[in-house]
Image 1: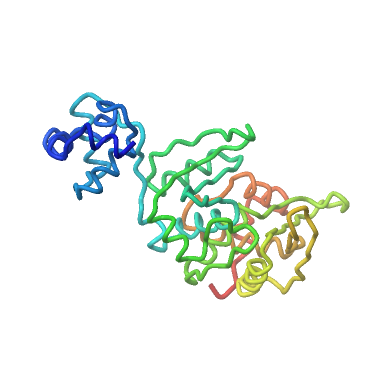
Image 2: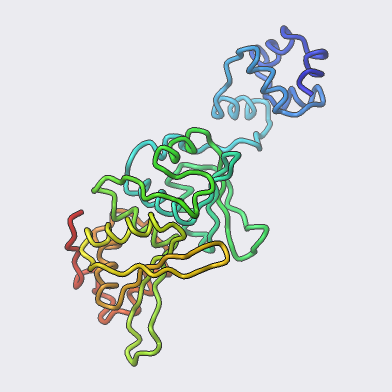
Length: 291
């Protein structure tokens, strides 16, 4: 299709349309009945300076048109550490998906949390219901720089069975753990006991990841725990479990002195519901780890 375009659109005309008239790639594609990708490849071959998304959108607004295909996002989000970045990294590490084509997806049943993620990433992408499961919401975006930075942190496509625990600066490890917990952790009550004490657990398909997570939680002040393996249809699922007292300590690790609202509200509320004097739990349980 790109070769056919060249026979109908001369170089000089392409330059006039794109550089002088500032037509969008979509406009040019519609004029010549080809795909936007074909026009983009032609521009790339001709070394035409690509207009930024903001500039392209401004030109479209001047002409009374709306750019539908591209959405802004902070391409440098995973290049700089912050509490928000560490949390989102933990969430993507456990509950995210990176396709071979470079699309990053987060599909969970908490739309409010995805809205928070979208906002901290300065994204204009829409959050949509998952096609395969109606109760899930999906936040998807595709940016080479974001994929590259995630790869530099050890988060690669097809990561679920062999994901590694990234090197996280001490100042942000607790935010990262909270993201991991919201992705692959759970808090629940033990109904076999009269007082229904709180229980928590982390699950992962990667033995290397769960080993490092358990060690990190020990460094955060939790006791050493055995890692349980359970066969699944796709391999083995590995698990760490904590009882009531240790779940209180985990609560302090993840929510004590937090600097943002990046967490799943229902999990936080369940912790507080299960602890005695839950309304003052943040005052009664203090963080005592090394980070």
